[in-house]
Image 1 (tube, rainbow, N blue to C red):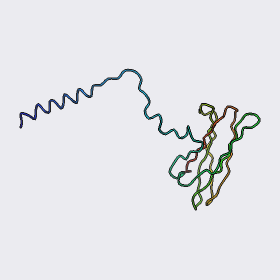
Image 2: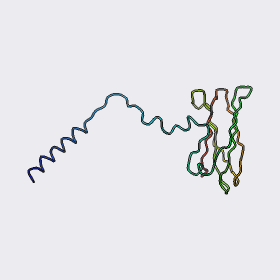
Image 3: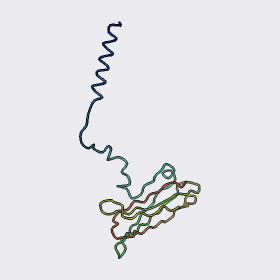
Image 4: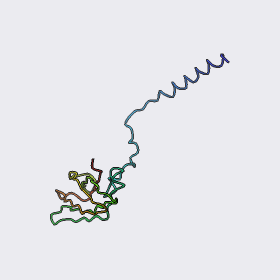
Length: 138
């Protein structure tokens, strides 16, 4: 038994050493580029579980103003039977999806089962897309 133990340990050690010595040259490819991209494809996103449980959007309206700026209005609804406080903002993006104008988060207080209309207007005429983002107020 002792005669087999030592050679087995040596073989296992050699296998571990050989497998751990891989080398890599050049740049690495990005990992999981198709995950967590909701902000790139959706116009309304909820950041946390509290917002997911409490808030919904019943409609979004976008208008291009005569000077080329984008105006967005969203109907934000409280789904719960209690008063809630959330923070909401809008990121305006160009045709390729890059943010060209980000509004600050503002506090929105929604009464029980209430709906509020929230509006934003981009500061420049480059905005073509948008993402409305909602998070639970702390």
